[in-house]
Length: 177
Image 1 (cartoon, rainbow, N blue to C red):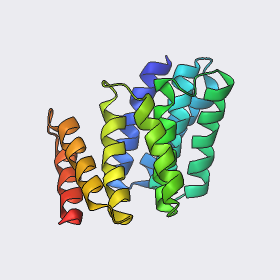
Image 2: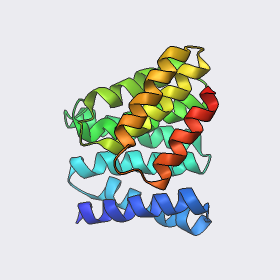
Image 3: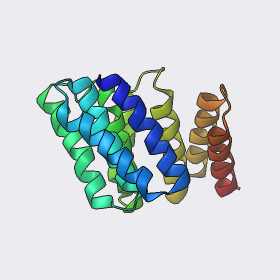
Image 4: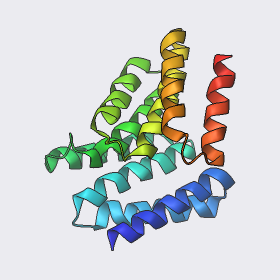
């Protein structure tokens, strides 16, 4: 069941993000690859490949990360789903990698593509995009836009206000301060 495996992959990715444990990296990446490369369902394979890209990015493997995001987008294009919400994570995580590389215009384009195709119920994608866009605009010196994105982030994550959401808001506001 690809949906079940994606939930497992997501939990393992979070475990790796918070622990940094190599075994969590291995398990998270394996689960993402299993769904991304071995399912006949592109609506699951696309976000699974994108999530694999995020796991790789968290490990500092940026070239591999962008390759997985590009593979997700290539599959989306082949299935005519590049403008469908299932592709939003691929654009989102590609934007994150480009931001790491200081390719700000390309990062903005990818993040805005993710924003435009994510639906209102895609709070994870939208909150991540808003957080990184706030950082990007601050890096570009556009403080009013950075504040707007920060407020957008606050509006998305206000309910439920999890520890991670509080951490994101505090970090963005501290940088703006």
